[in-house]
Length: 279
Length: 279
Image (cartoon, rainbow over all chains, first blue to last red; front, side, top):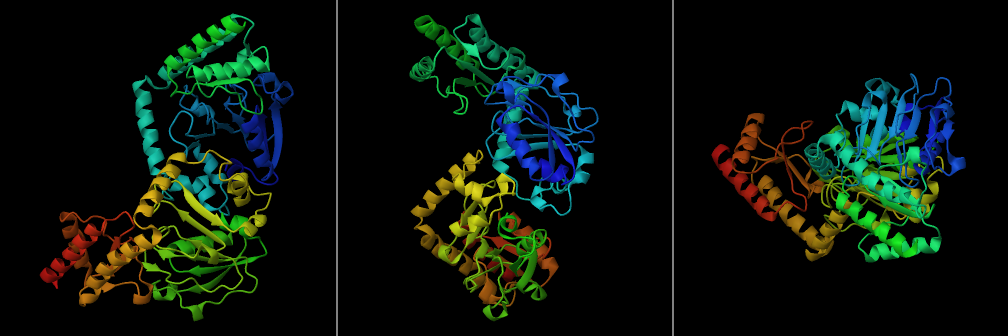
């Protein structure tokens, strides 16, 4: 919906390409207008977020698009890129509600609920008022941000159950000390796993240190055989879902808000034991 | 999505306009291609479904679109229109799973789940294989029937809870004797209310007899004052939601699958008592 509403055939949008989701987003935008890749770390297998000096914005871009957290590569933006007056659009699907974000520096934030906010089937969109004027009247009504905004998200029958769940999760979050509270928990959780990775040379984190994600901790073992063994032994120990995305292999621990700290402790313990036996 | 996938700028789609939803559907199609209104009963305030001889199809239409049940006007197609070889597309959102339908005579059926099938937030689409070839590669992936079909509806993370609920409702339906079983219940339920309407001149059905909906029973009272009194007294008797849509006024009893027959009996009883006091 972002390019359909904010881009036109002769305009250019800047994309910060840091993984699979931002690549797909850029591909979709090409169907609507021109796309300029303002920065990408593809040549380094997306193991890090671009540095500020690597970002080359185009003049008069319709917007700059970024993906705040890259689930497959285990990287995450730590600070927002400086895009000047160009509207910053961020897909925060995989880290929304995991830490405070500076909403005011964004022109549009969108996030599918299914990682930290609620069940799959609802997307949260925060859009700056002035951008609504860009939604062409020729757009299908269901795809127009302006129509949804005018109708206070009630143009159609919304997914009421998913929204209700999102409300319950939000209340739970407030009880956890809000975004500051959960961010502290998430830093502690991720920190425990990165500490195991850094403790010796046995595990090797795939994301470069300064770009490490608090949501998805990705690492390799000395061999693919050991990785298979690790995944198998972990499952026997009750630790599921550790296989990395099929496109990159390795190990991935996804530790979204709902994943308990005790589970992280169990995994850290398992990692130490596994290294002791196989290191 | 129907016009985006099946229509093109220089092609024509035929629309059977029988109420608010089919009017909106035709308006959306106009954004993509040409629209021919093959029949409409707008001049009669949508109080009936067009008769077979009133339908004038255009030559070589991309498809014919109909809305099987009109929630606001309380009308419903009793037999499918004869459209020859033109693909028949039906929005069955408000009566899907309420009665058997001849799937083979359709080229595409779509239905939001929220009336008879499950919670809001998922739409069921049944599409004939040959139509998938019409989805242009230039379409946004999320709006392409071909992409969803190729990926067995798993291109994106689907609304899993809504789908799970739809599965539970389907099992419940099988326990009710399937679509034949629930159709008999729905005919009996609607029949009881239409019998009250037809018993005397006090209540006046707004839909013409041959087009009466089994899902939405709409009627008027001798005056708007009496209608207000009816709605108020009904609420006091525990019968909620009887106010007609604000665009047409009057009374509307929506008796989808989930509405119990005992509720219909209570309403029929209330109607008799109200007429006795005010008739």
